[in-house]
Length: 222
Image (tube, rainbow, N blue to C red; front, side, top):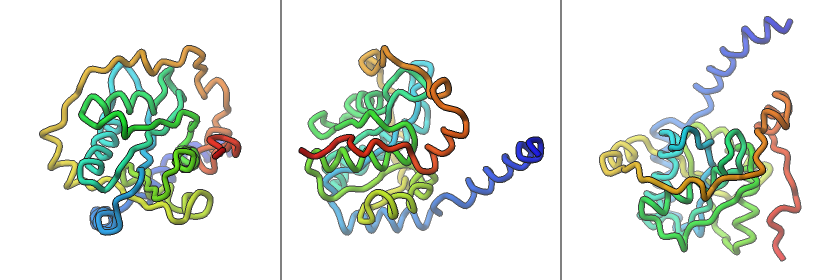
């Protein structure tokens, strides 16, 4: 039975990846909707592990997408969300360092460092936004992650949270101006880091990805 599961799993994952993403048309429509209904007080940008002392293309894309939305006036502020999950660097803090390095004013950048799964990025990001007093909130990420979180956000987080998935044509247009700045990544280092692979089983991590392991007391509004 285990062999069958291991054989079938890659195909299931591939089907999920093909179905769980917004089309190019849908991303453009959601961006237009955001432009018409904005500006948003804040956008939540989920993190991704920082490896080998540099950001990868996914992190770079998410940070530059947040800059685009900020520069366009669609977002007034940005919350980067992500703990030190698979590497010893807080994902949110790393993204914030890159965001400042590419020109986003630090006064408009906030971080959330508890989230270890995508669902938690949405949940804790929303709680952090409430703590900061922001009312109109949106999630901004790549099209795959955004659609993957859509149902969870509607049912478990905030049914009024807007979704602004990355538009590929827009990213291609701004790509020539993208830079790879140097940052002091040691500022985001977690000295007490223990990999989630050592703290949680594969099944527990999978459950966390699907529904999160929420601390409901986090970022309480006083």
